[in-house]
Length: 115
Image (cartoon, rainbow, N blue to C red; front, side):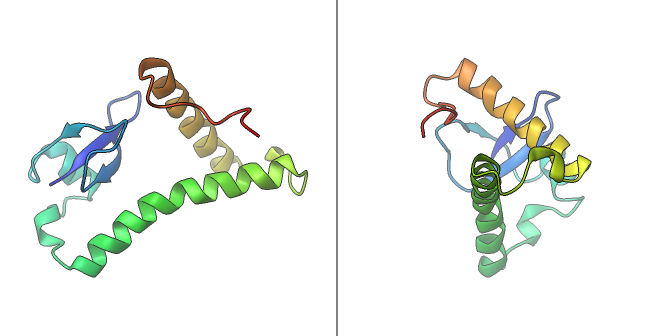
């Protein structure tokens, strides 16, 4: 099953059913990192197609939320400091990870400054 993305510490940050432009590492369902990501529940136990679709949708939707936050900040509807500290930490962490990927892979391009 899963193709995985990892953070700087090597922890899985995303799981995909198909390879992505910046995600090519494939792991078996019973790999320790996969089990840790799913909280100890092996992915083969998640056989409900609707649940798998919802999980993939959640992963995809994260980027939508990030883009929405960027638009609200760019339009001065909110400021970055208006966000709770935990949210700010997560945003900065994801921006850092995306920046590192952009620096090591020409396919991944930062969208900063496009608009």
